[in-house]
Length: 480
Figure 1 (cartoon, rainbow, N blue to C red):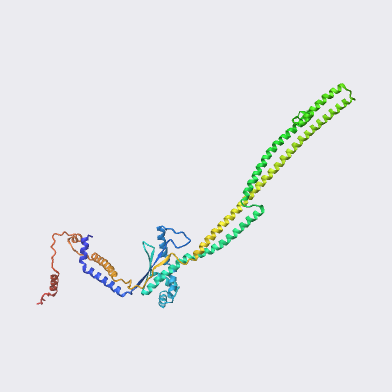
Figure 2 (tube, rainbow, N blue to C red):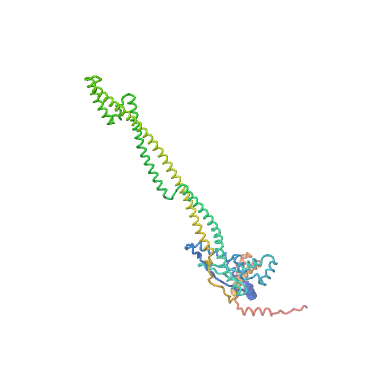
């Protein structure tokens, strides 16, 4: 359909369209005057997404979290819990009008308190500001004072609910933390008792065991050095004893290293050699019964006995030195094993002490952390203010918010125009008319040979001609 054809259709049915618009305006005006007036009370609350917790660190909140926080507060305001608090505060369940309406709609079945809360939420409108943290609460009622009171009650009870939502979990957590603190205190005392008992049983004295372990390690090193020296001395003594034994077996004890290194034996052997030479000289000059012979012989035998005794003493000395070296080596080995065992025991004790000390430190850290968190939670449970505040209290409105006459008339004009256009199109659809040569060509498929110009007459002449046609009567012809 072309625009010109659409306009011609509306122009042809202009009377009907005008009538529909006028009728719609009349209905809207009648409804505006007949419908009961309603008043809207508006209060405003402001919320701070950062909170006012004195124990928490303040910081900027991202924009996404801010929008989510405000949306959450809107849901809290529109919650059934807040509405129930309003019902209780306003004592609406005792209002005869509310009781009568509840009985009419539900037949007295159900809870009037919950029903009235749902009814209040139907008349409540919560609108957050787009560029701030202010939330507007609007309540619609038939009386201005009622609208303002209920809007203010919603704002007050919203703040109360916000405080409860923050304090009640903190109170439950505080009780849980108290139990945890008691358990952790018992665990700390048990760990401390174990550590003290272990210290008393093994003589562990804190960090002094580190110095003690270092001293024992140094002593082990010293024993090890003595053991090396004793081992060398033992090998030397055993070597000399073996040489002495071999020399005695071969009858060459005088050729042994020990004998050769003994200055007393060397002196005795020198004297023995002189005595043998003197005895040989005396034995050639004198008889064996001569006193000089007997004296030289006695001296020679005495020196030989001394040399033999000294050699025997040297052999015994070497044997004793070897035995002493072996015993010293055995004692040093035993001392080293004992020292190693002592060091291992100290290390074991130190490890166990470290474990027990770590258990005590861990238990103390857990206890301190739980005690701190419990204290913070208890302080939070005692807060009596929230991060929300009432910005503006609602006051009884002077003018009714509905019905709004001018708005209803504007809507009636729009609706009437739509109805008029629809009616014109529907009528044209079911009762088509020829309004132009295009309609004749398209509808009847007839070629237009000529078109007379439209006669332009004034409205007054048109009305006069219409009156003349109506008043004109043809003469009656009587039958013959």
